[in-house]
Image (cartoon, rainbow, N blue to C red):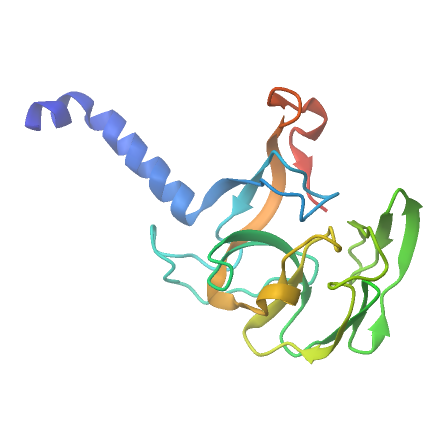
Amino acid sequence: MQKLWKDNRGLFLFIAGMMMFRSAIADWNDVPTGSMLPTITEGDRITINKMAYGLRVPFTGQLITEPHSPERGDIVVFDSVAADKRLVKRVVGLPGDKVAMRNHRLIINGEALAYKELGDRLFIEELAGRPHKVRIDQANGPLANFETVTVPADQYLVLGDNRSHSADSRVYGFIPQQELRGRAGKVAISFDYENYFLPRSDRFAKDLD
C-alpha cells in the first residue's frame, strides 16, 4: 500500500482535489427529463456554480459562509427531500412573495406577468426583467392553476419551464434554502437520446436564460 501511494501520489491527490472541487465549487449535472423545456432539453449536461448561494464543506451540505439568496429567474439545482432526488427548476417566488397561477400564467404580488405567444406552444414570460421561454401544452389541467400563496421565510417557489409537464413546487411544495446546491449556468454538452446519443453541436456551451 505504501509503495502504491508513493508511486501514484500525484494521481491520488489530483483525483481527491477534483472530487473536492466538484463537491464544493463547480460541477455538472445531467438532465434526463423535459421538465425545463425549451430552456433545457433531455440529454443536456449543465454546469453548476456551487458557490452561488454559499460555500459548503466538501462532501456535505454544511454551509461555512452566510447563505446567499437566489434571484427571481435563477435556474437552481437542489436536492429535494420531498421528491427524494436532485431537481433543476426556475425560481419564480422569493420569501414574502404572494404568488398565484391562472391558466399557467403567473401573478406575483398582485401583478400579472406579460406573456408573448411565439407559436408551437411556446411563450415568452417576462419575469422580473428576465424574459425567457416557457412551454404551455394546454391552458387547463391539474397544474394550470393555484390560489395565492405566500412564500415562507428562507424558502422559494420554483417551477419548470415546461409548465404543463413539470413536478415542481405545485407538487412538492416550497424549496428550503438548505436544499439549494447551486445555480445552473451553461450547457456543457448535450447528447441526442434519439440519435445514438450523438452530441448536439448547436447546444455546446449554450447559455441558460
